[in-house]
Image 1 (cartoon, rainbow, N blue to C red):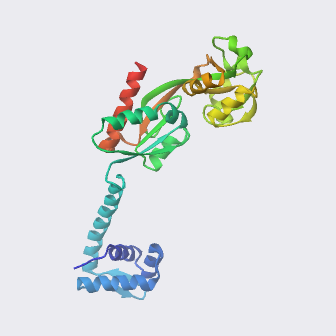
Image 2: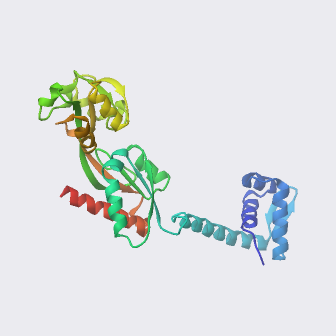
Image 3: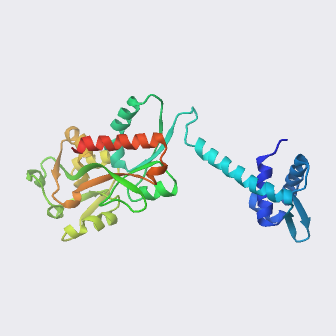
Length: 301
């Protein structure tokens, strides 16, 4: 006996909807195709599964019994498909990781390399770049394995553990008046033009974070998200910028720039690792999360 999964799916739809026409609409078929699948299923089984009448269809006793078994089989197949999606085409584990740009640039290249060097089997990581404010939602809604974001505190709706910390600093051209300062509050730099792309990725969101520490608005001259391009503009005297300290260090020496620490409380950023539910993590995802957490503990010690 060879029973087609599509036929079982069609039978379930027909019994749910009590109508071949509505089952066809639900399955994206024409009514004649649904009728043909049911007839072929009955021929294969050697028994009737549906009784047809002028108001639609109802299951026979055999059809009712098969309906519940078919739903269980289809549920198992769906779970099997979801399970297989956790592996790459070569059979190696696959982890979906969402992260903000700062963590991708500052922490992940080295830590992923160290992790893979310790593994006896290959591991594929699908890395999705997104904004910190979006990552917890993506982990929940798209059922991603891990997320890395920074925030004032842990995001609701996900399980979060501390990851790295970093600071944002002012980057100014060599010879700038602020160069003489050991550290400043952002409010002390308001008289200068700024090159945007701010923490939290938009000026409006940044002002929600830092606006309480300012006595007036910043003069944002140009918005540019690319770190290298922003540093080149700073070098040309087009303005000053706020950048993660680790990223700023990459460009300071080669472009002749200067970083000025910020005294503001919000300038210290806390990154978090998050998962939807730690109890349902697959072993490969749990292993990577534990490794990241160990690296963070060693770095912050």
